[in-house]
Image (tube, rainbow, N blue to C red; front, side):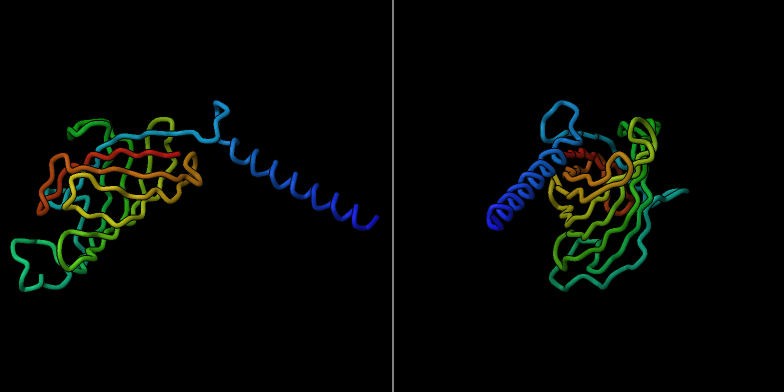
Length: 184
């Protein structure tokens, strides 16, 4: 008798756990599938110069190694940003948000940064929500992949990735970065 009650209790717990996992998986879905995908596209304006810079070098880093020539970036550099996110690449394009965060140059050779950034949405259906980006970014690559590790508001518990490409960029002055975000 005790063995039967124990078996029933274990079975009931397993059924409850399985149904809890099933219902949680489908909770964010609007079409009955297990996941909802979202694609965002915008341009980040990264300005190191001009009357109102939106990015600044805070720690200059150490001098490049003797065998590295022609680079203006240094190991250990720390830069902060408060860059506009816009619908299009033009300066007058409608603003949709702000990219706020910092990068640390972590490679002695090449242009590899550790990136911590929040993409704060200010317009449209996601206004007031933000995404958290944390990644190793090699700016020498044509397409760079970053990880979306969370968010706030409509993006709470977000997971996904971002692909960024230099649209029009100069390491000394800054420029425009084309960003595609894929959430699932």
